[in-house]
Image 1 (cartoon, rainbow, N blue to C red):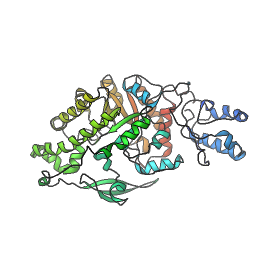
Image 2 (image 1 turned 90 degrees about the vertical axis):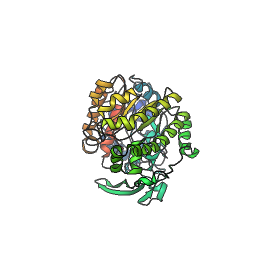
Image 3 (image 1 turned 120 degrees about the horizontal axis):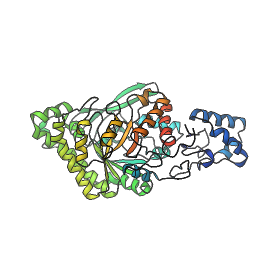
Image 4 (image 1 turned 60 degrees about the vertical axis):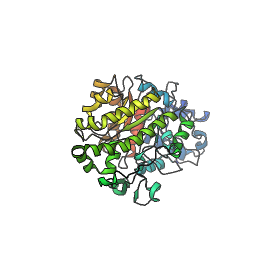
Length: 457
């Protein structure tokens, strides 16, 4: 494993971020003074983040004067590669999604708010602490410091998750602008306490409320201010993703109630169609505006899969969701034929993948390895489809060992990313129960043991 991170407790402005690339003498973030060049052969042979940090700390304890000569403030910009070349993150993603193999596999990682805060503390980051896993309202400092290649900006109902600060001043229950009621569901892990936000009330539970229901307005200019700022500041370097997930089905059942929505599919399909159109029209309007603003990709989709099969039958998906998703994709492609479309569904949805390709899908997300075999999907659909995800968040990342995480990354690179067509990512937001050692093993394996950045082992 190559050297990937050197971090010490330092005065503000003197911490380093993730190191990417080859030997230390090639790192722009870390400058070694002439009198300390003799350290390099020893440091370059060190394998693993802990041993590197321990070595550096011992060196500083022996001679504190080395602090200023070893480190300089963090620099911004794309990560340098070990062979002296450099690709911008957006170019790296573009190559991969065009089935070309870039210098390394593109990476995208999202986090629950609790894990994001824990990660900030580990990286000695300061600043705003509220974190939206879907990208709405974030500062992007954490994502950029990690060397991620995609930046997300979200408009739509998915922003209602973890929205305590937005709607309730941080209290443990709230009602979002759609009328859906939420309540915190606390949980405990070995790394501390966290909470999920669970839906507890549905504004359309009574069918008589449907006729008078008024959804939020997707044309409000303030919804797109963040996207405009993100595109202006970072599109030249990063691949920008407009997020409109929970596009149709998930928002519809949040409005109606999951059980009742399933009953409506059979007993009152006309009512089901009416309710499905509410989020469909909203998210289509949002996605159109995001494409017009210049995002590179729209991330759409709904969870319609379970561990071993689909939540609804393929026939129900074909009747209620496929025509709407086909219109969604064709409308966006008419605005910009170059825009990429990613579709999200947890679980096993193998039975509808050919039809997703048929209606114009470019990227499948998240490809849960515990539900579907990424290598098998690559063999069957890799010439028509790209894959985003593939790193197991159910077992390996939270409960495996760092070596198992690294091994899974390398396996995905060999079996799915060998000719591009892959963005590596955990298959869900990284949870609080994930050891930091496993998280860093993931980041280092992607950024340090893939593509051309494999010079140090």
